[in-house]
Length: 317
Image 1 (tube, helix red, strand yellow):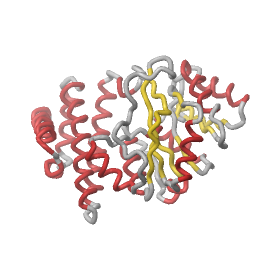
Image 2: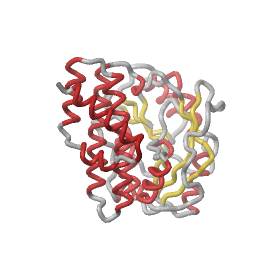
Image 3: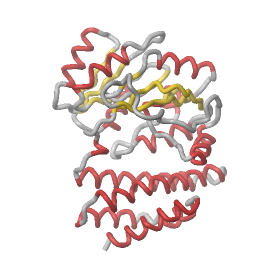
Image 4: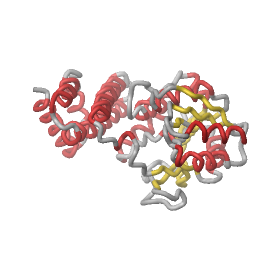
């Protein structure tokens, strides 16, 4: 669990994790350079519960924090949580039973959003079109998800056999924001057996202080550059999947989905000037257009891609 300036919510998150029953649990909390009372909250909790391991590091972002946690992990299974979220009672034991019963490499759970009270969901469950009850390879899951327009990258809904992480040396890309996208890609491509648990058990807090909601132009530019890296990785992964035409098409189709998020940042969030020009030029220099055009599925994606192309051409000058 990466922790950065979450003191107001941290005790509630810790309680929800430490109150999980019917399984042996180790909780690895990585204090990522917090400047509030988060570390004090962690230390107080660790004095009362020996299952907590604290790693204290300078602020390096959630990817580096999660990698530190993975390095320290010793259990058979790995789950992730954010420090302002909440896990329903019995969630981990339920996921564990499900994963063991189907001999899974990865289980995808379900979750919901909440505002202040984690026991009061806001809206519908996060996932609605997953192959509930089925078991399939990660590659087949990617294809199914892109067909259903629902490929979830929420790391905190993933329950992963640690042996899979070790065998494939899986780690988060440290320099990226939205690093969960490529992590999920790597996990899926490594997994031979994936299963799916429909009950929404993970509560995700609607937090306006999240970095993805930051109005900082530097943060927005960093997000845009991260999407450029992600698009390149998706296209490269597609090119290396020639033996699986359905997977190759699915990855290019999803690259178009992520390209639409980049386009929103470029056109609506970056407010002109040298920073937007530099981002547009960086995208254009990737030479991804041909692959993206080839992967567009339907008129909606073609229109979105054309809009992005015109924006990049305009702003790179």
